[in-house]
Length: 113
Image 1 (cartoon, rainbow, N blue to C red):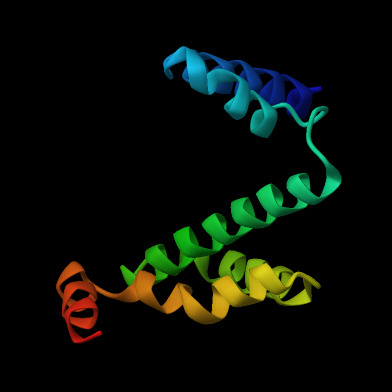
Image 2 (image 1 turned 180 degrees about the vertical axis):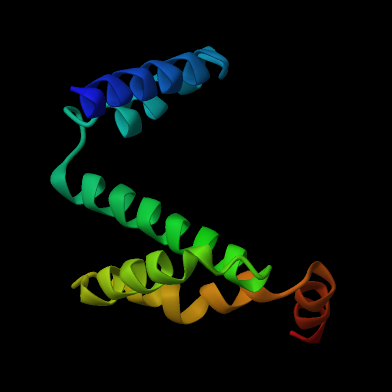
């Protein structure tokens, strides 16, 4: 019951945010927020992105000394590693390390390319 109420509030909030976009973008964004319209593959990619985001949040907190996220980070990482999705593995291999870099580090790396 609480979970269902939370999801209803979340869906309403997302709809309100989409209303703030220019009219010509509404249809495109509605596709991504309305799970009933989405193909299974799109739902899986969005869910994977959500889990990656949670993992990055845990890493951020851990890097800032908040050890409360240790177990969550480990659990989420195990979940991500169990996915049979090449796009998830690619993101983890190529991009995750850059989230630990400072802006100066990122700009320095970009300048060397």
